[in-house]
Image (cartoon, rainbow, N blue to C red; front, side, top):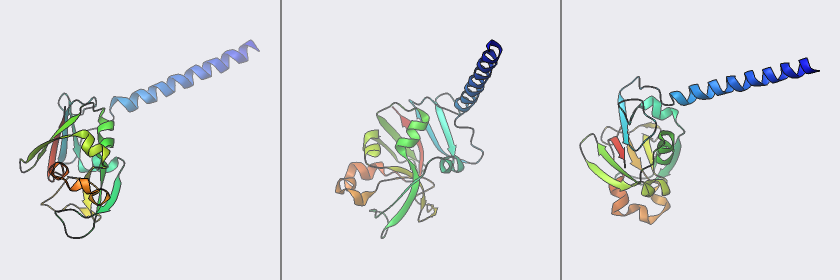
Length: 174
């Protein structure tokens, strides 16, 4: 009986050790490195990075591999209802271990805006990379922060429209 008990304990210890190794590997490099063109850089108060200290870089394939959300809405900048697909900003920030209250966003055309993260998170904002199941048009993409504008009239207020930055290239969380 003692011998069998010792074998079971050794088996449990081995199993626990193996599980710990797997978890350690998964946490060690959650982002990986972009293999394509970098379309988004996130910096500032984030815990996970894959580039220079405190920066996370994403190519389009990396963003598409994260949990996606889609919704249909009209926008002030497009004609008729449009379907947008992308990652919820709250999910992106959670994946990075972000802890700030504000985001400073910069577009490829150097447009800049700073907004409270709660505005985007609490109102269903996504970092869209698809419009009507195709890549965003060049004048708006490759990334665009979009809200489900039809869900609440307040989403058409200036503060939400200014946070709806297209040609998004970087976010700094502070």
